[in-house]
Picture 1: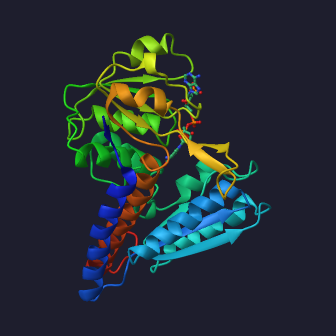
Picture 2: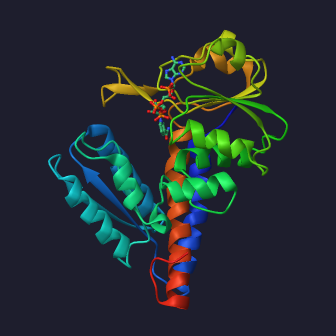
Length: 303
Ligand code: NAP
């Protein structure tokens, strides 16, 4: 069994990004700028945004965070999005989800300029993804593809089973792996809460991607010998031996399943770091494209 070490791969890719950022600066451009909008005090959201800030700085990407209280009105948040869309010094930004219940998340996502949508959640970017047109891809599916690609795991002709059909992970990764591309050319089965006999389906998987949000759902008897298993799930479990008081675990029962796989991602240190590094890659892409467009057309927001 080979561990798909997302932490190690992410640091390798970060070194590549840092080199490209340094080259941009040497060529008289400014470093790409990633902004994050954080609403409220959700601890998980605060941790994610702090991590995005830290990782951006490590590669020379400019990072800024716009913080607002839980009580911000939808209209005010839309104005923040409009402001960032027009700010020529910001190449890409994310609005950290989830948002408070009184704010319509989809409305906020649709207001983000597709060329600055480094989370890749805008319908225009998702549509381009579906059609195989180059675009900003959603970060977690992109990180999964990068893992498969860099570990040189053959996907063509393989049966890929995806558990979970969220808009941010399951559905886009199932589309990406079924595209006529590399990685891709898989036969994909996408499972959700209406799917019957999930263990029977997962046992047929050459590649199993699990994004359900169900702790240790995937057990040994659900996995085919030699399968590639990618665990997206992330759960905090109490652990008094840790300084933080918790540790992370996934949707796959790693200890049971690992010995049966050809490749498997750990949690933590698998898909998580790949998601963050994909966000940095998207920011670099948005920065490079945006600054080139400004030079040729004088507009900030043209692709
Ligand atoms: P989500 O929006 O919570 O959706 C869960 C999906 O799993 C839904 O499609 C649901 O089916 C399906 N599902 C849930 N229970 C099921 C069951 N018992 N049988 C069959 N299907 C079931 O998922 P998400 O946002 O993609 O997140 C999934 C997990 O990944 C979470 O643990 C999250 O924290 C983690 N995550 C990690 C990263 C990372 O960077 N590592 C990024 C994003 C998410 P229905 O559609 O029918 O309800």
